[in-house]
Picture 1 (tube, rainbow, N blue to C red):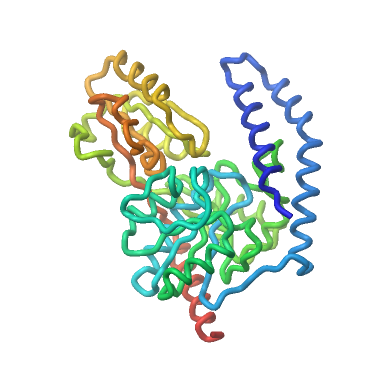
Picture 2 (picture 1 turned 180 degrees about the horizontal axis):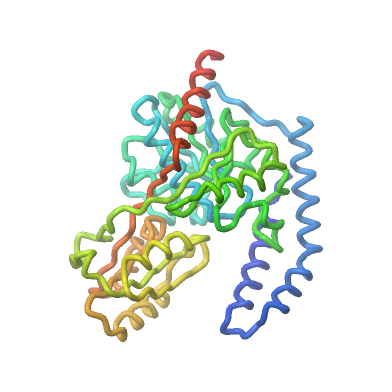
Length: 385
């Protein structure tokens, strides 16, 4: 019993509704509210399907497999935008010098199927943008993709027998694998407790299912995160009986040229930024870029969108007709993986295109607490083994 086709159908319906509700269509809030009301029956049907599936796992009718090596899952309840990949990368940095780490992903939106181990010549169409990003950042670890995580782990251990720790990227709903440490993420700007089931909202399953997690991380918080904010989230999360709660934020590094041919621009001289992105939630990035320029123009597409020549030509026309003393195009690391497809960048001509590296930082003493959680799990696992 799977929910893949149903989930994709509901995502499509939701995306159409969101596009219809863009300002250009002159649809007001009342009609948006009406559309949500009309989608409630679909959400109820979807909720029943997912609940039955979860009960089958809870009762042991559908099997969850445990493995002889530690498996850490990073996932969320929503359909995207919580920053799973940067948190998976945080774990890689934390553990790669002590373990032979492998990252396994489904390779969302890739154009291939089956098991593939990423290599130097891999492309986003072959393995997906997020696995490619991890592969390029950490060439000394194994990065693999498979749409079926349990089978993927078996193949990974067969092909890379020295692997002794696996990180699953976006696997909270993949219950055929029982991870030793189950990490759940939720975004600061769109926490799961304010959300609804697909297609009315973004939730893949009911909110109370958060209790499966061993820990929850509230991600993409502001740089200045007040005690009042922390208390608000802790209060709202109390009903879900979460074992441990942490708070993290995204830290953006210095902009990097997308290719060696990218014209050099001094960051302090930039007056105008054109943001090109296809990520689920870009609020944190937009707020960051607003502090780095006088003008910010946003060209935004759906999450994991494969940019087309017409997308880039539209951006180039906007770029060319905008008068500015210093202007650049900036994209995210994940988007950069898709922009590097052969021939795409030709449509941007000589425009300077940069990407922003991103990493995860925890607030206050949460970093120490989170690291301790991970190492305590690995210590207990080794003792049990």
